[in-house]
Image 1 (cartoon, rainbow, N blue to C red):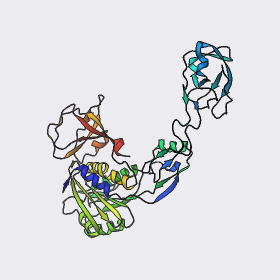
Image 2: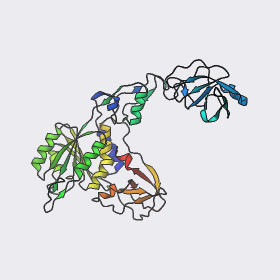
Image 3: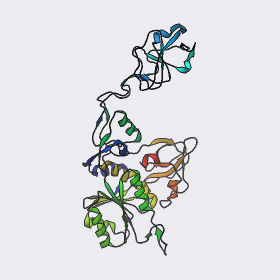
Image 4: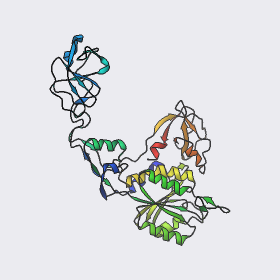
Length: 398
């Protein structure tokens, strides 16, 4: 059954079971983890009016006419200022609290020291100038994050700024990765006639780790039905998600389809994308099963377009679609394709998409030598200047 990508992705995300197990982690250990509860701020940020600049705190109304203002006090970050004296200036530093009664800050560069004890303001001052207002960033009781947010480094800093030492997050799902095929050897082993090195399993495991998930190396499934059944059943009893590379096409030696069907259930698809046509979803024991094609570029593309969103949703992430932006094509491709194409491309100095010279599904170097995937819709010829969606690798790998 041939499915459009958007239909397949919507259905697949709908199959991802919402996680329930949670744990409470120190925020220093929560990078990349998914919030299981909403976070509300117990305080306002900033907690007090403070200076945005090194300079002088003043009353704006006292600076008219360029009069000299005596320096009444020195206010450093972490200190408690005295009430501001009228017709004076308080020496103040970035982050220091604004003295009560002052309403603006003059940058040091916009003042002139008169006699070592007074300053003259050289430019007009408006109330509120260079003052960070209390609660200007976050108000007390405000919802800072909703459940389902994957915490970034900036998010960790924000949690720290409101005084939280920990966060309740979903437990990591357990993912295992198989390769498939008697022809596969591991790097470091000596190749024999007709054998190749296994690139898919290390690549897919690295893609899983890039999402912040734990992953188990399950080795290579042989071209033998009974052994494949036994190893899939064993893995399906202890893991949450099983991923395989290869073995889901129509070859006589592709036993994964029969093994998954015998040990659980299988829905075999053909996705209307290029590269990456064969794809499988099912269940083995307690684990979801996702079968990727064997060609390395096809495996990579189907992972980032289908498996990545599934794993993120199964981890509790609310927004799983990758970010794309529109770029002009820097090439002509007059012959349309019956499938939705995802071409390896980079952007030139004018922001135009330029295709990698090799678009074959087995040329893995085309990914390493490109900057993102360029989407060409079904049955769409391309002319230079046409706008197409570009998915930077940065939006597909994390």
